Amino acid sequence: MKAVDFSKLGALFRSSRYLWLVLALGLLLLLLPRQSPAAERTESGGRGDAMTASGIPLETESARLAALLGEIEGVGETRCLLSAAGAVVVCSGGADAAVRYRVTEAVTAYTGLGSDRITVMKMK
Image (cartoon, rainbow, N blue to C red; front, side, top):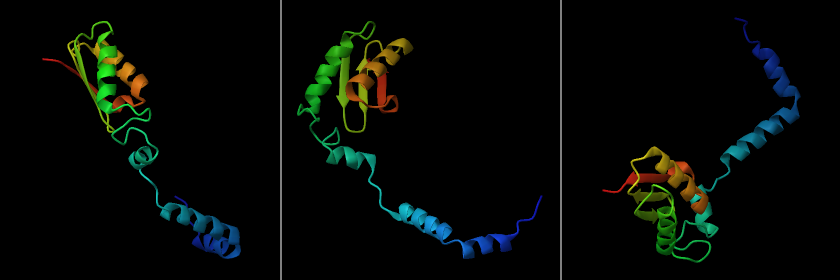
């Protein structure tokens, strides 16, 4: 393995003001505070608050979603729970992987939530 010549690196830092400027800007960007995605949704009026952006309560949205999902083939009786963190769907056909996939796709399309935030389970 070739040894690193730190004297050349030190000379580069001493001679180049631009390199120092780039490093300082990079450190400044790292130190700037960032806002969490959940806080951004809350401030922008998204699903982070008790009402949706359309002004419809989440309970009403959950009921509308459950009615829609019940129309999908194989889903059967359905109950939904929506929150800022995700969605839970309990349905009669929840044991079937194809049904779970279709329900997850429908909930993703309806809510904009990622599939990692949607849980589909079989109703007892």
